[in-house]
Length: 143
Image (cartoon, rainbow, N blue to C red; front, side, top):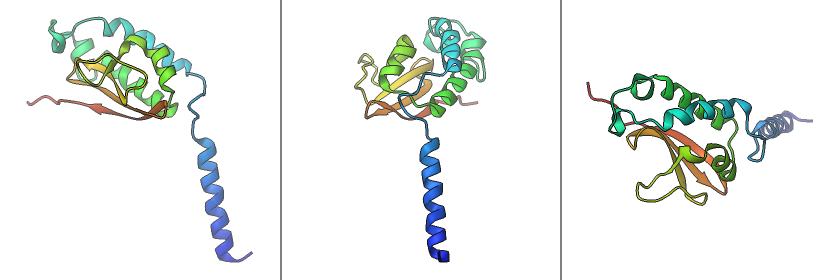
């Protein structure tokens, strides 16, 4: 086998290995994600300063409890991209529509998980029935 064929074969093996290691959308929901969601639910029901309530460091502060839980959930979702059906089942009331005047729907192109109202949170891009990408959307305070 020539050097060119060996190089092509090595690239093919690398690509196949990467594909095999990618998580599938239909894999089981991780227990760690369930634990994070269970901790987030009661926090999401409270109103922090950015939602018209009093300042509550665990809800409103940078690296407060809610912020850290959402960071950990984001990492889980990136490692194990779920289907939109699984997102709806597992996250339920935590999901919001990206459009303020519309309810969350499984066939939407995106979903929003609030950290601090409509101001800061996780934006989930959805297509083909599953999570495709997520990113933080932050207003960032002016000092």
